[in-house]
Length: 255
Image 1 (cartoon, rainbow, N blue to C red):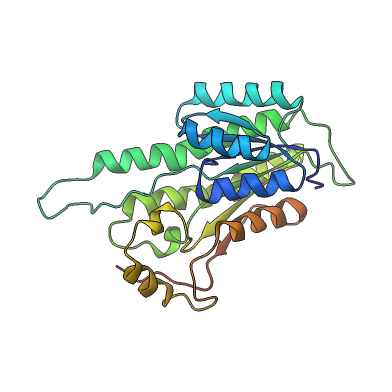
Image 2 (image 1 turned 120 degrees about the horizontal axis):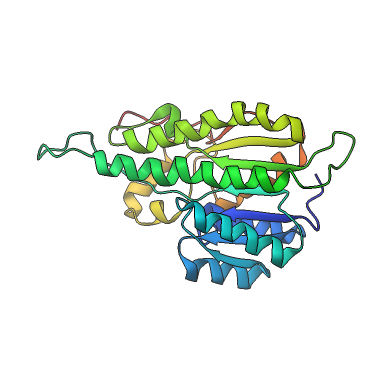
């Protein structure tokens, strides 16, 4: 797919992987809707790239529907690319040392990471169905969701996070098969250890220790590395129905 001139929507785009993706797609000529729960973050990135800020809670379907309507009114067309980066990084044991359960945290994590992804994905599919088919394959759009290596390598304390990201990864194939009839591809990226706000908050010594466990390159991934993978998926029509690990060959230990 030629990215220049298309409309795209990126969730979680006020920071981290989403912000890098929004910037990269805009640099390639896309008109980008910058969706984030943090309205100030969304506005800052949108102002920087000439996009549209869309303050939104992805777990609220009414807000997501309104965001899609605003984007189409602003850009004049439905999105051809949707990238789901919004999510929360919950860490909690099933039963902690005080004997407390993590059911509320589990529910919230599933609500944002999995149900929120599905809500955005659903509205993207509906919007893309109205696009004119392009090229010899009749492609109408590409949806890229963000899983995590935790869906396969979940550590202690990542029951909620791993389950939510496992659900995101599992969406790829059945939704890709369903959307094949309208020419919409569905993929997921499972990042490993990336230099985001979650990592930035760790002590320098801890960061260096974690980096040493990553085979090659022995560093945290840059958000721009994620953005480049998004571009590759958008451009390569044979990428469909799968989850790609983007992790430098890291495998997370139990704890």
